[in-house]
Amino acid sequence: MTTDLHEKRRKMAEVTLENFIDGEFVPASSFLDSFDPSVGEVWARIPDSGKQEVDLAVAAAKRAFPIWSSKSRVERAKMMNKIADLIEENLEELAQIESRDQGKPVWLARAIDIPRAVHNFRFFASSILHTRNSSTLLEDVGATNYTMRMPIGVAGMISPWNLPLYLLTFKIAPCIAAGNTCVCKPSEMTSVTSWKLAKLMVKAGLPNGVVNMVYGLGHRAGSAIVEHPDVPLVSFTGGTETGKKIMALASPLCKKISLELGGKNAAVVFDDVDLDEIIPTVVRSGFTNQGEICLCMSRFFVQESILEKFVEKYVAAARKMVVGPPSEDSSKLGALISKEHLYKVKGYVELAIEEGGTVHCGEGVDEMHIPLKNKNGYYMAPTVITGLGPHSRCMQEEIFGPVVCIAPFTTEEDAIEKANCVKYGLAACVWTKDVGRTHRVSQKLQAGTVWANCWMVRDLNMPFGGMKASGVGREGVNESMEFFTEAKCICIKH
Image (cartoon, rainbow, N blue to C red):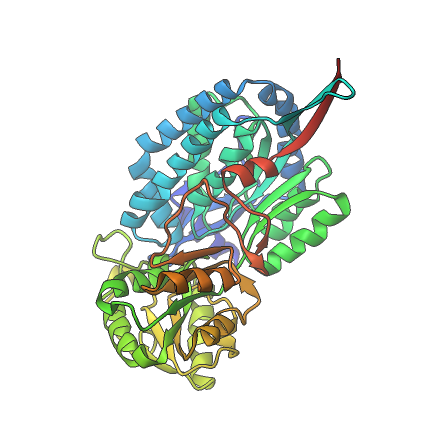
């Protein structure tokens, strides 16, 4: 980048972030540009941190650990509820920022992302007050055993760009509820709400060093966190290839790791459904948040007797989804995260045509009506493709955008085989009125979460995570608390 261009972008930026280390906001010496996807322009400057900044943050978290872990569960819960209250009080500002940073519609951030961040803190604040330990009595030797769940130390957190505050708080909340401290690296493309969260944590009175934010690139700041000898556990949400690299870095040090990775989710639609009833939800399951959710359905296997009618209704509904500026309530889809990602997703549509697919709507077929002020934004219309085999690249590889592929199946066994023929196993949907079939198919689908006649109905009491290349470990009330603690058995002879 030329000096003139760098200076121009610096002046364009509306906000400059600092790292948050040991309760202080520490100015950076070098920065990365963060773009507003809706207009394609720089709007924030992000610290380009590395090992030095990570070392400072880990040291701060390590100093804070004895203090924070010694606080009672009631004290930790009170602090977490204060943080939740402040997030809720600042919901509108955070929703506006999340939209600017990520490209999602403001209404979506307002309805889902920020309220879920509030819920994450309140849920885990409550859960730690309702835990039970186990015990056994050995009468023959006169001894009692009991268990405790002990906090571990400094956790490394690396979170993605698609649901920035939502997923970051899903890691921070159980981590600090269990008594740990943490060093977080949000995605360099969507860091601003985490910076605002740090300010709210200061206002809430969270002790210095309990939560630290270090901004930067994965191969510098992220790797430094994973490789740090004083970080005994790492929680990561993101792509499968990055997850593999984290495993390779963490395994020599015997770290605990939690990986929530990619997906190529399948929805199976049987011919006994009411299409008019299910179409709104199945369309939403493909295109919410521009299709940039790991739980979005990107493959639809439809019983061949209703395939033609399903495609007709699905395409018609997809065409009604307005693509436009995230600030407008009428926009059902906003902008994709970056120019590079937009080109990647469009490239898969071109590949689908090369593979023999037919594009029914969206990319290359339908014109979008984007206002002139947003002409440089990263927009793409909902795209529906048919005619691809289950082993084609577009049916096998994660696209992570507003692209869905629809294909037929014949029998129940055929549907299960096609749905399972990918390396991923994060989520799936089954649509049928047959209760017995619902159970049979749900149990045979290789996915960590299966929704039957619904989509994205979440309960934090339930485990969340993927099979196969979609991850290692689970998140949820019991699973998260087990990850962020170590079990200790204490035996007392009496």
